[in-house]
Length: 230
Image (cartoon, rainbow, N blue to C red):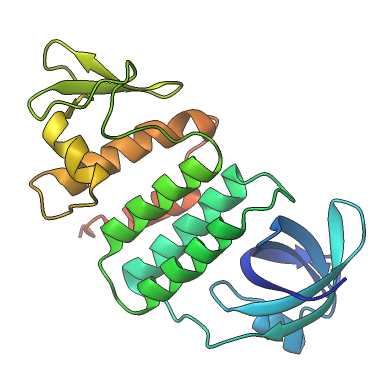
């Protein structure tokens, strides 16, 4: 097989000196055995490093025949690092194995680069979540409701994960204001409340597809953000 661009999503020890690695490639998420993981290949097989990888094998578990660096590593730290780990976990949990999504691969590469450059985290995360939902066929309109009617600026809406945004007659937990939804549709993150509403909306949209299991990266990030007590 010819080499293809890839990023490591997750790696864990496998047998004596190998690693079991989840890769993101334009051809989808692939799992492969990396032999000699304690050597040079193991130092390269880290998250956020652009790679060229040659895979061999026809089964679900492939073998890494060749692995080379294909660019400058994206060095993430602090909140950017946890954000990158969150993206990786989303892809492992939601992206079907060996299901090609070249546009998702390119969006991931651009997002990781933007995280390394220190750009604002929240807009990057929301855009990535939205793109992932859309790529998997779970997207919905932000400027129209389930009936196809335009979202009203002063309206109130709730999310039906299987259909889209549904108008409601009165304020209730979990609803969204029309102005917030229209700001999201335009990616206008300067609008009051837009980013906070987008975070709530993406959590509601992703929840049915995560199978009720919490995201480890999110829990770890929240634990580390809690103030220490004497």
